[in-house]
Image (cartoon, helix red, strand yellow):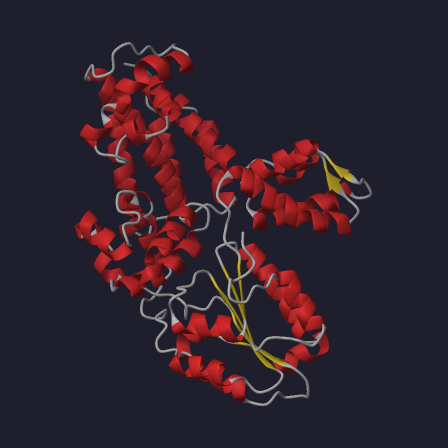
Length: 464
């Protein structure tokens, strides 16, 4: 994670120090996909810029989507209601987006489609505007008429082969929420650029946050030349994410006189996926739960946070394979309680059924020699997986079981022997029928999912 732009050469700490000494900049831009850190930095900067007692009258929070930049400029030029500094805040602005942002937007949508569907939908509507497409064009399987070449040309080569995994449910969510395209187009920013370049009235300050920026845009160049830009880009890799999480949460622990044991850090990271926002929220609960105790242990994390969504997903897929209806329905209830969207749950079930069906086809066709349902994973990796991997070019990368992780392939092949070909074909037809019904009828999604699990787990046949 970076906290500074090269031109400004500022860190958050130095920015706060400058403000405390009366050397505030006329403009601050905080951007990046690590939204927890962006919001945390925003709070510190606003706190430093304007006294708490003046914020009701001299802090103006605005939205550039509806009216563009003209009302923002007007607010920046208008004298404050009471003497003192005036701050105009423009959160989550789209003014810095451009067509070069499309690949990053696609990655954001794909990454958050399962974990945060509303956020994925908001990013998707921006993507549509920038790409020149409409929601109506892509709905009702219209997206399937867009070729891989057309998609890659619009999205900068990002997400062409993988879009079928997330695009249908994002489209359905956008349509169900009545989201409208055309609201996110940035429009002209020339007036704001000229205002920043010529200088704001003394004591006036513009603070902006953005998920992503195009550094080539003149607005970005002016903002960094006349003010300060701080970037908070998500680190890649578990080790880096763990380090970032620990670095940012130790301060919170220290203020409360607490520490986490080494093992507790590991458990917390696994429970939250090392996501800063989720980890910080969990830490607040842990601090309250442990009371006067100074050391937070793994058992505390297990008790307070409980089962993760990944745990519940594993339980659901395990129940489907074992045809354990009671466990399947309980796992479904847990996922819905955790706020997982019904289309995401259906996609999980569909993926499991599809991989079982692929495994059955591979075995029945005699394409995988040497496989036994009782073989260990090690021998499978050495003797069988290379043959499965060899089918990837024939079947298409990313579109079949052959493209998955070896352990996913191993489990799908083993578990497919517990079903007949007819059962798996019937289950595929069932999930497709539920998918269509969810998108075309007003039936209760929970009831539809419960009926689907009853049909899959309630079959009489158990093996081929």
